[in-house]
Length: 75
Image (tube, rainbow, N blue to C red; front, top):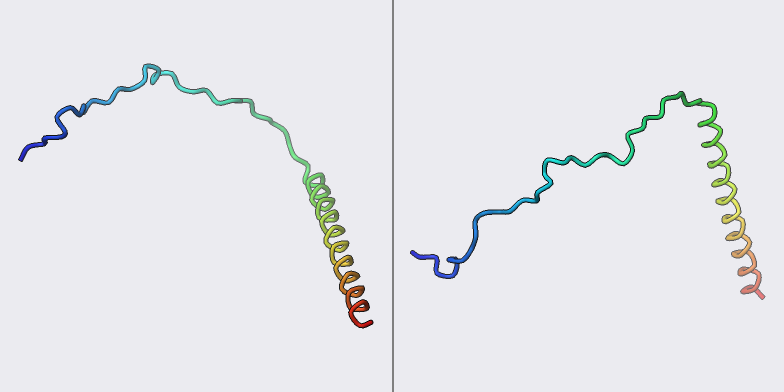
């Protein structure tokens, strides 16, 4: 059996010239220091408070809209 159409295929693969050069990380600086758990808790509580206020305001708007729609349709 002969490989008629595959006679010109190359089996060698060329590799780039800079294989020996390893890429350096963007920043190799390490931050040494302690994190205050109270600061993290306060930030989390603040973000949760904002999200709760947003959710309550959306709920109030939907309830008011439903009430207005109900009054309008009952007339």
